[in-house]
Image 1 (cartoon, rainbow, N blue to C red):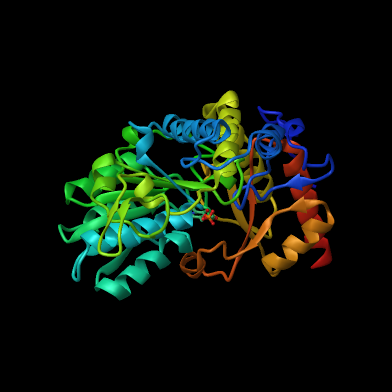
Image 2 (tube, rainbow, N blue to C red):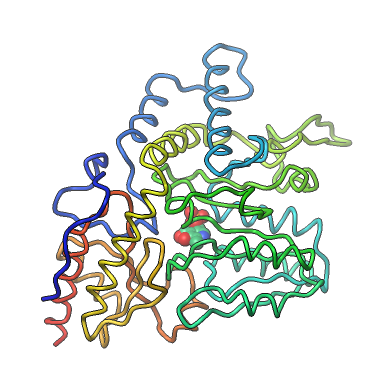
Length: 404
Ligand SMILES: Cc1ncc(COP(=O)(O)O)c(C=O)c1O
């Protein structure tokens, strides 16, 4: 049997009430488990302090508004935004990209303009742009990958032209774990006058992110992958870009004045937040960011890098296992077992109390590029340990035994 040392720098599993001792949860890239501090913040808010925000004339609502807006300031601090008003609350990264495509894209892009994506994008950074293409006649280009599964920035440099108005790339791939050289991507995009959107879904739980240092123009992520609740996520954009964008959904809270003749709109971020927001989601996200910062993203990154090294070493030593992605993947290891469908791998691992993801990971173009219908994926979080890697290896040995 392949041996791996059951060690890793962090030991946070006791903070997570939904992870039993005998369960190896290796699906954090799909959604992270929640620490007790997040569960408690949500329970406390519903049980003790709940009220609506922005509209109430009573003290409870005023207090909740302060807590809600403190959440916005917390997000700004977490990702290095210049101002809390540059943070728009959305349901998640998917909604954030649809917002940018429909609002910014609809206002600023026209037939003949080009945008550049990459081969490894999640469907949520492909389909919104195709919907915009169908509406406006823009063209979509797709950057290739390097041999080891990174976005090929040399190819990006060669492909970009002044017709490109936007480059939209994953900061960290949800399948391969490859980390984009975002600074170079920004320089390349800006050199032709294009804006850079980074899909930070897999980056914010794994790397320190500073949107100003990265010099991107849009940054999006989902709270549930960052140990926060589902249904809450963020769009960041520079203030002048948000100012230039029209509303994309209409309703309460996003207006200045409404009459049947003419409606005027609130300034950002309210302009993009029609309806009652996910109040408690924001409070839960705030608690999650406090939790992550109390550990430190440098420590989390080092922890997950150590687990990736353990896993790749162990799986690489099994002769029927094919590994995808680079060795320095940020917390995500995709693999295939020769002759066994990834769904069967996932089912047998589940019998061994090991939870992985098997499928196309909402990245069908990447699967086609890799020449596989699906992969198996193990992904780590702050609660993961070397014991989980041992359980994965034991489970895969059982898979090999069952399939001969
Ligand atoms: C890289 C990436 N982008 C976007 C998304 C979409 O996130 P959500 O479904 O939370 O909107 C995901 C989720 O898996 C992802 O991994």
